[in-house]
Image (cartoon, rainbow, N blue to C red; front, side, top):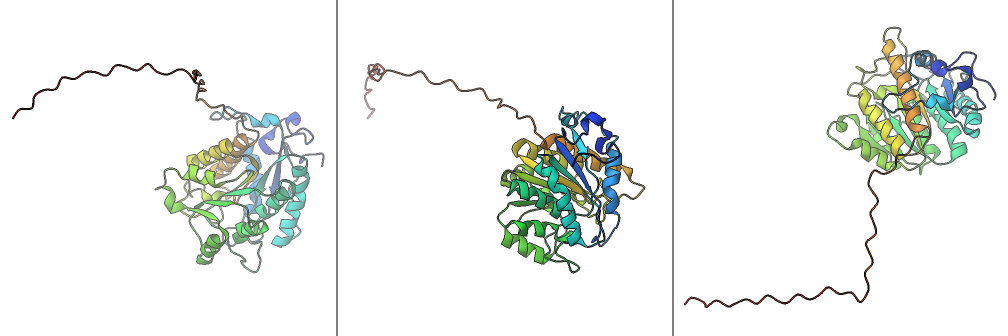
Length: 330
């Protein structure tokens, strides 16, 4: 693999920053939407996100970073022969594997959430076991849906079964079936339901503390509230706001070693262009937080070692204070 897509691709970078040989990051568009069951159109998400990314500032004001200087190559979009999700998963894995083997940090762009199955399989083939941090309105823990274990409603179940010992933390869940709750308990999936987060002040710290290095992060954009992100196929009220997601991403980047990530379920609607820009801005924020982040030294000053004392040294005894006894009144 030696070339990027024909266009300038993600962020509309200059040629010297999108050369495959030197790029630290590889962006893989996965425009698959074969199994979505409500709002169709997530297959147009990757192209629209990449188009919007051309308006994102290279310099992240909050983080004081410009990770694009490490190089970001946009790979050719994965091609799909039909709507068969099993074939799609295999095609995505095959497309992602060379870049991961070449040491690139992988950013996958969906498409429906089933694209994460193929992406994670490619990452696991190279890096081995990883923890999964999952942001979503839905648990996606169904063993099968509409006749397939690779349906978008089964994405996290498939990943969980690919490695049953891997840690999985799911954030912002607001729509889940009873059978999914049973599976989550049996498998040990850590669920942070959306309705509980407003009462848990330390939920970000608690969630990130559960993860073991290395970490893969998958963000389904319907994990955000529809007032913030309306352009998804299955919007659910009560989701995360922008700063909650950013704070979560920052905490992961500061405390864990992230090896790959994806953003999926953007469904462009031709009206809410801010959704496309939000998805692009979020994906770049993730890269700035996750890719070779600067590690801050502890601000706590080092303690000076206590001076050694001679074994013969003993504190001088002080004479006992003499007290005069007062007569007791009778």
